[in-house]
Amino acid sequence: MSMMSIRAATPRDREAIRLVEEHAFGQQAEAGLVDALVDGGDVVVELVAEEDGQVVGHILFSRLYVQNGADSFPAVALAPLAVEPDFHRSGIGGALIREAHIRLRDAGETLAVVLGDPAYYGRFGYAHDRAAGFESDYQCEELQALAWGDAPETGRLAYAPAFGTALAA
Image (tube, rainbow, N blue to C red; front, side, top):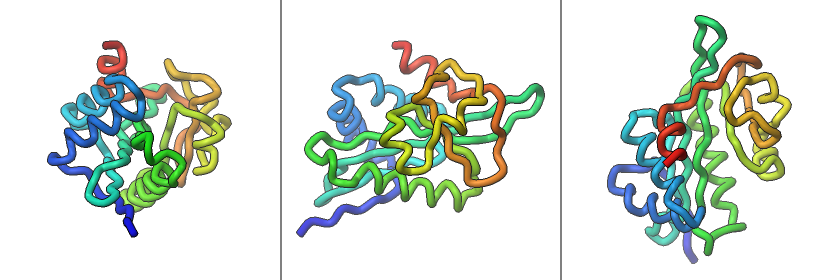
């Protein structure tokens, strides 16, 4: 019987993470985003899921800031979350999200933002209502937030520079 395990990503995982991202999304954009976030030093939490020694899932939370005038509040952005297609619907994505949330809360983070399927991310507490007050280039129903404590409800979301460069390529 195989056992899935979740652990922090290491530099040795870079190629395996790239493959998971490319297989999950069918393109290279998300893998490029991961590389740019890592190279830019913007990673807050990055985890991999392993099954029988093979990396089959990946999640990354990067630094995000909520800007209100001269004030800047640190938060995190979930992007990307990827699971090898052969392992979809096996609970790996949810396990990665739950473990990352524990690590983020333990580190004192109070606000996470994601752009994704509301039905999926809503299961983990994300809601558009919580993100609706933010100004963002990505403002839409799929923009969702989750707060674990005292966090702003308005302001401009300032993503890591990699979001502007990697996804524009």
